[in-house]
Length: 253
Ligand code: 13P
Image 1 (cartoon, rainbow, N blue to C red):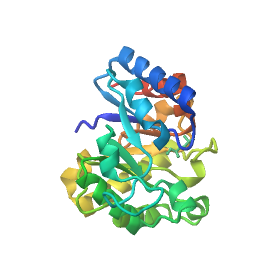
Image 2 (tube, rainbow, N blue to C red):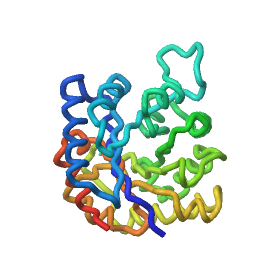
Image 3 (tube, rainbow, N blue to C red):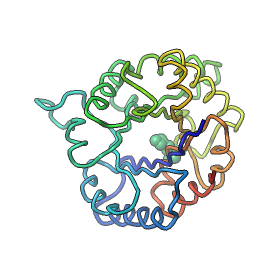
């Protein structure tokens, strides 16, 4: 079973025009040089940079994604962006249900599933984020929390082709802390089982499950070597070309 590694950068709310374009160009150049066949690269800049990032990565195999979308195709939703709009300007992916959106905007599993369903219908691939808080981990609820989030936020039209799951322990995001490799593998294997229950074994075997949360060049090798870890969703380290590319260098099949 070969699942192609996905190295995805979530830029979050970072980047003005000049540095955003420079970052996208820098990534594109390195991706071109690396000419990897075993690995895919994705950058997810903020909405304001999508168009210029798209131009900056043209001709390299770097893919473009957004960090959120609405579930409707158009209409009276001030401040929102639809999946059709993202598709229209060349996005292939959209991140949904990131813990920062769950916290900052009160997004529920139900809402995330609705957004994911629409995004898939619009022809986008979705990266659905899940993960426990520190308190939940301390209370031994990690697998339960992740199970509930998958059952609730992965829509019925998800398949291994159109959906990626990102396991991001909330307490590991931007903190420099990570679970041990054993702990990460335990959760990823459990996630695959839940996906199997929800979408069938064939989808579960082929679906990519990314790890996210303080992934950096120094820990990427150990994390990306785990059997059920199929790539990374990288925040802080995706804002530096050298770190982002070094993470991808840590996994060569
Ligand atoms: P950091 O890599 O900055 O911890 O962020 C991870 C993340 O939230 C990616 O979506």
